[in-house]
Length: 162
Image 1 (tube, rainbow, N blue to C red):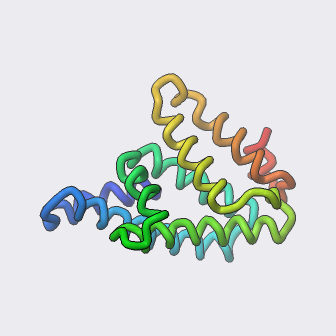
Image 2: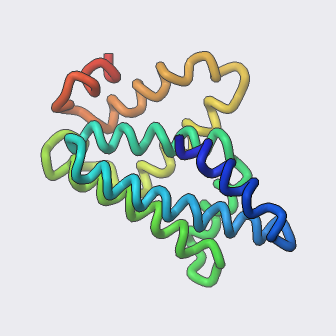
């Protein structure tokens, strides 16, 4: 859903933007707002581990669909002067909150931090975008999320980790 919404937004604003950098900034700003809203909903509506896995899955789909934008966002995450810094920080914060919530409930590894989460999400998003690994996307997602979520609280996560 995240990737589809991003594509629709980018298409809607595309004609109004003077250059590719403006498009990237618009996509990043939209994604950060969407991720914050989704993260907020997940924080209150799902078990912590389900919320984290759902958010991670959406992030992987975004990375797979928008790898060029993600590369720019990854660079901007470490550069407070970048126009993309604020949207990147918002995305990072949403994931961090979900991870901390799952860790507080004892359903996620305590030695994983938000940077680890984003590195794994970005790597998996890139990997499943490769033709040789695309058919294994669901398996690889379950493999990675089962390494993060170690004590699942619901049947959905238990199914995802089998």
